[in-house]
Image (tube, one colour):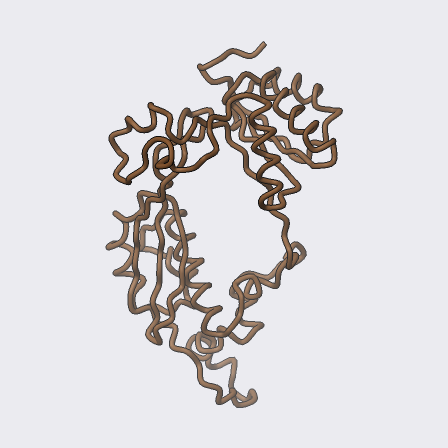
Length: 292
């Protein structure tokens, strides 16, 4: 994938998946060529577009923007083909209002033609197109018994490693969270709390959570979502995590783009003795604290 210079359409053509589209749009080029295979071809005409907002319960995790809302909001996009294949894509919340305008242009088109879906007079945002594109590719892959990554030239690796994504947080039954009027599920205090983690707003608490996640899921790389405490406290958090793992696990830190250049350089210099694998510090200082 890293060395490929072909477009997605080129890859589909090379694999034979786009044969119906080539026959329809480039028939003169095929004159004199070998007869096409008689293998049955799936009808990838889109007969229905579904856009479904979803809300999953979320704990009170913290970022530079404050406490996350009580729900994780996303939108599921499905394209259903004439042969009954359903391709699935996903986008952030707030795209459902674009459904009717998209559907009237997409329904009746082939999933193979997804790159034409942004042509005038269609007005479709990048985030919506990305979800529809993935749904179309998913449908194409299902029709041919191929993984989506194979449609795009093959996987870079078969066994990717996942990093723990560590957020500072309040306890799941924090009074401020339970007072949120947007909550419509049955969460509460004690045994009715969303999860048992408790509050994580100190370096030692974050190190303990990272270690428990490592024990439970095997994470060997740990990314800290920073920009919540002061930069020096977050540096101490990395040091506590490093001590917990005996210096053997790579660490990542993302201050959410809210450190000043001076702070980013200072903290970067102070992290030279840590096994830092990823550092994304650019941005400005948030109003909740001022860096030195």
